[in-house]
Amino acid sequence: MEQRRELVKGLSVYGATSVVAGTIIGTGIFVVPSIMLRQLGSPLMVIIVYILAGVLSLFGALGYAELGAALPEAGGEYVYMHRAYGPMMGFLYGWTQFTVAKSGSIATIATGFVIYLAYFFPGLNEVLWQAPMQIAGHSATLQLTGLQVGAALMVLLLSGLNILGVRRSGRTQTFFTAAKLLVLFTLIVLGLTLGHGSFEHFRTHVNFGAQAGLLATFGAATVAALWAYDGWNNLSMVAGEVENPPRNMPIALILGTLLVITVYVLVNIAYFYVLAPAHIASTNTVAADTARQFMGKAGGAFIAIGVMISCFAALNGSILSGSRVPYAQARDGLFPQFLASVHPRFRTPAAAIAAQSVIAGLLALTGQYQSLFTKVIFSEFLFYALVTGGIFILRRRMPGLARPYRTWGYPFIPAIFVILSVMVLINQWSDSVWVLALVGSGVPAYFLWRIWKRAR
Image (cartoon, rainbow, N blue to C red):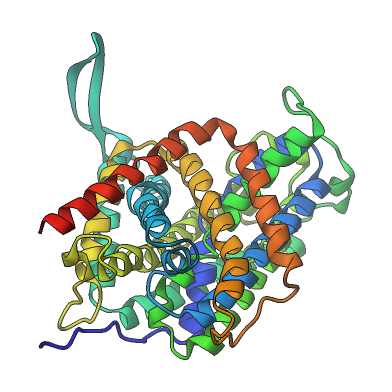
């Protein structure tokens, strides 16, 4: 019998930490501070919410560190869901990730990259093709822009790079994560030293549009901050390719998350020091405006390149991690078997990467940036809560499982994370029907898959 090929353990502690930090730092830090200020009205409150959202993300990472060190298998959250709740819940997780959560996140990041690429090549915003069509008796126009095509091509390009090998993609992740951290630290240092701003800005309160209740605005701002932190879970998906996972998984998860919290707080301090709060509340390009304040016209180009670097690294890390979920499910017989194949030369799950790229590429062609990421956030926090709750189940069900790292603050830290995650879901109730319907569609898909397997 031919021996089954295994994935190569090619991610060092530096590569693993880069996956954590690189997939967290995307476009959010360059956009959401303005949104949060319009909601909260106070620069100081924005920074406080960023810290609280960072602590919540760290609590989640602490729980995932225990699971990742104890169950260092490709697929991450799918493996934890399968072990804690059984094959059906594992299937539903993978179904959601494959069809919308991870594929939608990849499409969104790719779209963000091309939006900033259009800063240098405005022709990308032009319509390349359009055709009239009838939908339920209503006239509509189907069109394709350079932005949509460029985003789909970015998905295919980075997916191809990941097929070539985890060491190559891991080195790419490390390089681009270091590059975007350099951009952010440059913005922090130059902003605080050459920005000629004022710390009085932090005492200023702004009113921007209609003000909702305190809980509503605080919740909405927290969701925006959590979008900026999203991605800390991705390392668990490539746990099977991390060198010495019992040691390196907890280190990478905790250090990567702490690094991002520190950078985010310092960048926000630089924003509010350099620019007046009224200016920040009225712009959607706070980072570019901050750089332009002390770097002139070159500041806009500088930040555009920085955002592109950030998107590139986040996109690479998301493709690297997300493809391991259908691969792991296929190995367990819960997805088509061809998705479990490993490339004979590059030792990567090439079929799973290719299949994921097709779905993500199609989503990128829709061009629906905001609609995609709002659905992504709801679906992800639904499973963040379930996975973290699985820590309690597995400790009771599998007491003899080797746990090289145990969650600090157990049981309080994971319990707090689950409760706050549920509150995030309640706050996002407007997205719940669509996402829960999609997750629910995985139930008949699961039973149809089992019937088909039995028939074979």
